[in-house]
Length: 411
Image 1 (cartoon, rainbow, N blue to C red):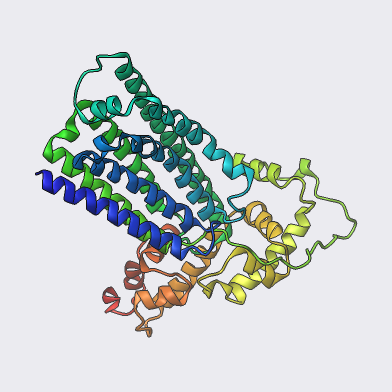
Image 2: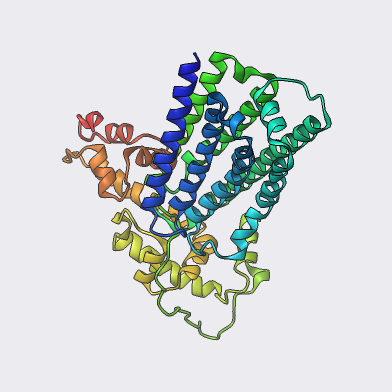
């Protein structure tokens, strides 16, 4: 069993190091998300190294390496949060003070961990490699330092996991206003990873305090869990690009002045819902009148419904704004306030309506997937979900109800 433990720990450390090098190598600079994920995985690999040194007796011979090994995990939470930040918004290099401040608390904790170097090496080596009760003042000092470091690491990691999850939720609302396809933009895998890491961290802490990790089955289960978790994260991290990359400057704004120049009288307008009131507050300083938005809405409908710009699977709000010659913020405001929809929902509805016509054609033998791709969806699952939301039925059921192609179920 000892050999199995050592083999798993060695595999964890070597794989973490390999994946970290791979992620950092793929990042062209330290401003890219993969850089942060690579450093995160590499530092997590030190937790395996700490176990290896304990199992092989290296820790007893050189107890001074305890301080850096137990201090490294304190930086994991901030690194993971910065990775999420860079995926959501890649602007801003690591040198910005707003990014460096995330490392203040871990750095203080790391300095505190160096207090172990003040402890006599023989006493430190004997205590951390033997399961004994603290009997001297030196032992109590070691226990105090270790407990403070472990609690600090747990708190920092948990805080940044919560911050990261909140940032992902905020991103979910924004991407529906910016993109027509949400594949690899909703970051569901990253949400699951954050929850998984939080659970793993809690279970690991509980195992250390209750000696569950000393049992062979418990130890193996934790190591395998860690290996799978971070290996999957690394693979998905390599595939994940940034969400809101640098956007080209939109053309000059189109702000037609209505005859008479008088804005709509708010007292005579319709009663606004809570969501519309929030939108009104958000865009209160934009300067667009209701008539301006009516003109922009006409341009949007012309480009989408008549010109068929929705067929572009990578269509974004910026591209639509360039197409109609109106700044993206004005297009977004018009969609929200005048049309009453997010950009994603508006384009998805146009795509589904076009697909419904194609599916209803009795002479069409195209598969459901071919039609989905033709109207701008990237995957069949996304198409099915949008189709069900708009029409209340599935594409196959719709085609069958319209007397369409009999072999559509195969598509």
